[in-house]
Image (cartoon, rainbow, N blue to C red):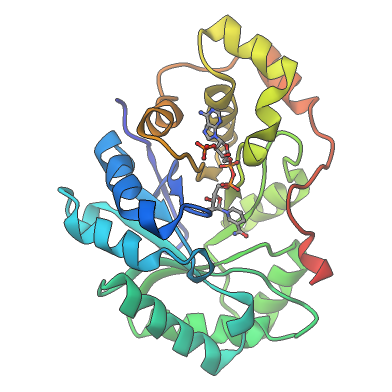
Length: 273
Ligand code: NDP
């Protein structure tokens, strides 16, 4: 299978454009599923302290028949650990669970504006990067105004913002802003948790290309230039989701998918926390 291409981040690191997301993968399944993903050709794993499977993901990375340097591992500091010292402690705890020397990407999971700690959290990530404990640092669920604030107060921009993004919520304004400032956008719930796949428009496009609706949506993500991290629970689905690099959508497909925009979120608006 054609491997996912790598995109360059503003700090010079490279990230595989399609990864495997492990939210709601039970710890009991996570090592086997992460190893199946790596065998299928995935080189990018997305987890978080909140997902309760860092130890199992770390074990898969250590046991994989692929060199550590060829794998890209992301984790995130959870809401309850926002704040400078709490984030440093949370990072240590994550790394102890992973059993890895360094992480490829560490994200602030949610800004939680009501606690007003995300700038301090960001300062902790800047420190961890300076210490060489994490290669790249970024944010998740940040609106443009949250990004503006951390940049204004620290002078350091995130290289990635991982946000909810799928055909219903294409995040046009955020993507345009981030493209201009060199911040890569990463799509979480790229399939809208599977819900968008029932849309008849996607079924029609899929039938014309001899592909599945999931492949059409993931191909759309790749053509938008965003990073996507679909979750799947079986090796056949993992393979299906990675098999999107040998066909292309045409202008009519792109227009039909653009028309699906409804603003529907499957998750929370980050400003409501
Ligand atoms: P996705 O959009 O990836 O959808 C996953 C759902 O789609 C699952 O129910 C899965 O079923 C189904 N599915 C996957 N592939 C196919 C397929 N080929 N055909 C039909 N159905 C399919 O949603 P997630 O919410 O899991 O998001 C993906 C990742 O994004 C997470 O795992 C996590 O890493 C990240 N994330 C980050 C968040 C953040 O706040 N930063 C929030 C939410 C997610 P099944 O599992 O049964 O195979």
